[in-house]
Length: 216
Image (cartoon, rainbow, N blue to C red; front, side, top):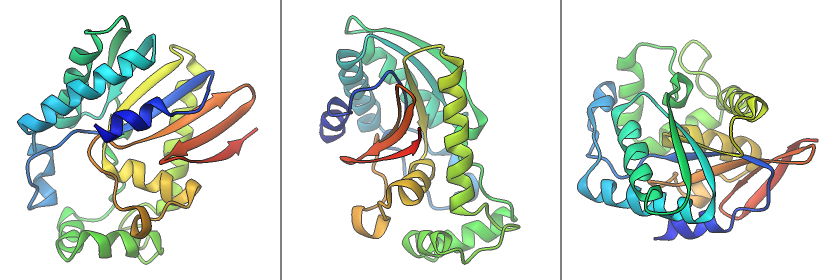
């Protein structure tokens, strides 16, 4: 499984927050009802394999997840895989910010924009074509996510924290801090991830083999 191999290659760290997109879900035809899209059988199986890979790589893991059911279930199946290893794992529960609540406008507006084409929507969003009363700017959304992850690190409850989230949450961090534009690397795949790493006094982001220092 490709995403498992990427986790193995994460650079050395003292503490880490790993944002992971949920596993494969059923099709979404209307973003206004996206929360009802559940994991497929393949998604459940992939989550377990991915969890086993994490369990073989790390000794202690704390898991949070978006309140959306497919993220909760991804975390649950990941734990099943982790429990097949010697890793100690604890599910802490849901975190609202992991649901990617960036939309300020009427849900009908965002559905209309996405239905026209997701790539066009992300291009418009990253280009600053939408106003703040429609959707949080991509740069601001990324800054909020980074701040939330830093707070998780500062609490020091675990050296490895897994946040099961959505593709938008990973995309905004890649675009803003790593310069990994979706037009070049594609949209985040199922179980794709981005790591926020604390090593000594430095804080860095890492994904798809690329990294950058965001704080020293």
